[in-house]
Length: 250
Ligand code: UGY
Ligand code: MN
Image 1 (cartoon, rainbow, N blue to C red):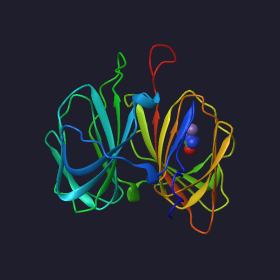
Image 2 (cartoon, protein in one colour):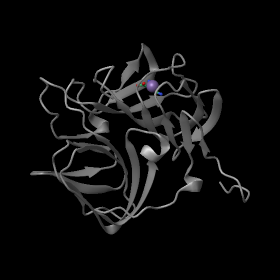
Image 3 (cartoon, rainbow, N blue to C red):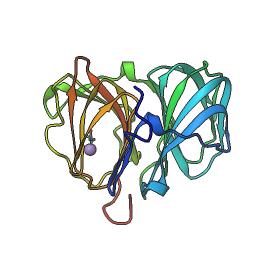
Image 4 (cartoon, rainbow, N blue to C red):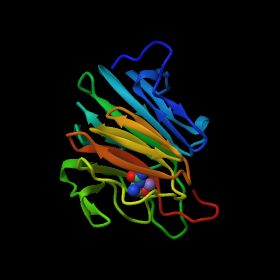
């Protein structure tokens, strides 16, 4: 879709942002070479996490050191090899991984055009809980659960649903006409990538047509609701901070 000049679908508001592909600008990031990287969300926007889109050339690679950041990654298209310390996997489209804080990790040997979304945050340890483990998986192997009893709104929870993990990465798929059952308002923050289809996202008091490729930031307490529209199911990948204390945590 070509927009008339001087126009964008991107909107930046107090408690939300819609970031449309028409406005993407690349950043150069230490540790990422042979790839176009767009920092879609980070603390400059007011978020407590970062969401990056990395589109690889054939010889691209990501090589990030062990530090206090943890990373959840999702391979949207293409494929590559992901290595987290001594564990190595080939991941295709729909593959995902979790690299805990304190572990160095790489993405190597990507097919040209591979698109990977990375969610990164500072890990918040919790006394008495073991640290989260390395995770590799494929969304195709995860069963979608009917969301609050609606079989037309299915949620795939990709990472272990265990208190050690302080972030969640999920894929939500809606049949046309299916909705979030109510307008959610919650303390947890979201970063979201539309993977397929289209619909209307309500964010605070604005309603936006959204489609594959769009990214949304929802700050804590951003009222949010979605209806899938059109002829194909709509699907989105999203990040959420979870499992930590109401005071002093995230
Ligand atoms: O997990 C969630 O909070 C999810 N239901 N929110 C959303 O899809 N906007
Ligand atoms: Mn939500």
